Image 1 (cartoon, rainbow, N blue to C red):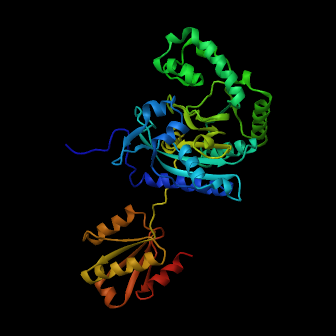
Image 2: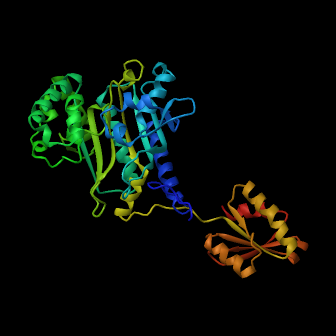
Image 3: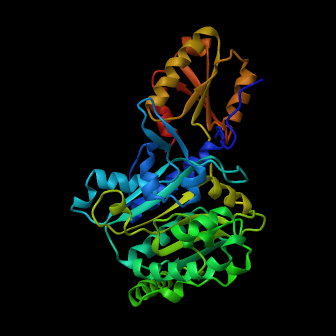
Length: 423
């Protein structure tokens, strides 16, 4: 029996990887414009980071983490999300002391969650995320949302829906928490065991339950917007004002709570409205997390961020029928005829590559006709034909595959002459 990739993982093959590269390059360029800088954190972290940072009442911590003990007896977890590791690094390396504030970071990398694999959802998946640490200005909330929308629209997506909510500050959340407890407690026995456990620890998480989402009490649960204090209301109003001024359409959904414990104030999701995209429409999520840095041992530091799955993004592109450009054509394919010519193309391919061109040659001793077919498969713009006779006369023939035009060139100066054809 052959060994296959583990369930919930996938191989990104040539032909597909170019799509990923295009998305990554687009995201990097947008981050450059917004002045976000790349950070790379370890794939595994101490388990305590996620217990304290993500929250022990979340599905991620309770059900989905890949955790183990290493040979030194330390509790280690493959990272299930990117924000806690970035904030850990921010605290550990004292980035709060940098002269340039806020600190604006972005990352790409694999994340790991043990959940049921389905369309666009894997146990190992790749996230792109941004984090802005050090500012409590609602304008940066709008900036994070604008960057995310710019990325999606820059890739051609049109059927998008932005949902926002406010989870309020600590005072507002405490008032809402008590109201939720009073609302659910009389009938909590009708809910799943997870919700029963959450009632005391974090009743807001009940609203995010997938099992009991159709329970009648969900529809009548107290809205966080009813418990926002004046400061939180003003904050949320400013975020909406900035989004409106940027021409970014949005809807306010008071039931949006997100799945992680560290969120407060602004929370948001970007969804796909594309027909046939699937039952799970969320493409991107995030929000403000004032207090996370303190939770993991740092100074008081406001922060906001978002993350998106590249796999979900590619699925959304497919649902809208969008094909991203894939640069696969090569500059020159070397066709050889004869042993001496074949040997010489090893050096010639090296020289072309050294001059900055993409070049390929035959490695399978194919006939000339088969070599031309190989050049066609690689979308070669030019084919250089070298036979033993041409080699002895210090000549090489270059064919433009688009026009069919052929010219004879001096072999010793071929690379320099080839450069001129590219102008």
